[in-house]
Amino acid sequence: MNTVKQFCEAASKQKDVYPKALANFIFREVIENAHTKYNISQEDVKSMCQDAVNRAALFLNIQNTDMYKPFAMYALPALEWNDADTDNEFAQKFFDTLKMFYEDE
Image 1 (tube, rainbow, N blue to C red):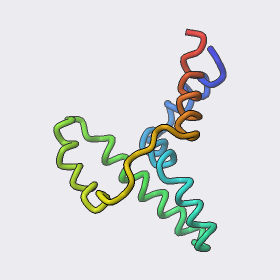
Image 2 (image 1 turned 90 degrees about the vertical axis):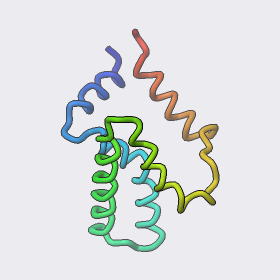
Image 3 (image 1 turned 180 degrees about the vertical axis):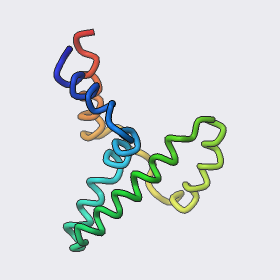
């Protein structure tokens, strides 16, 4: 088993790992940038991260995909935002990491 796979297997056994992973993946860099740029306290950063984990847990607990439709209402205030860009350097690194997980299979 490769090292990345071992690491992922160990990580996946932690409590609330998926809400924490999703919150970290989506928000942590943004929160850290705000912390640096706007001199937000470490306590506020911790609180924002906890809020992100709590919201991620709620989203991940949606078992019925029909429930995603009402969830879409949260996009309404963001309709003026740019569309998702998954053809970028970050996405490439992300997919390269995923590929490492499946090496040796």
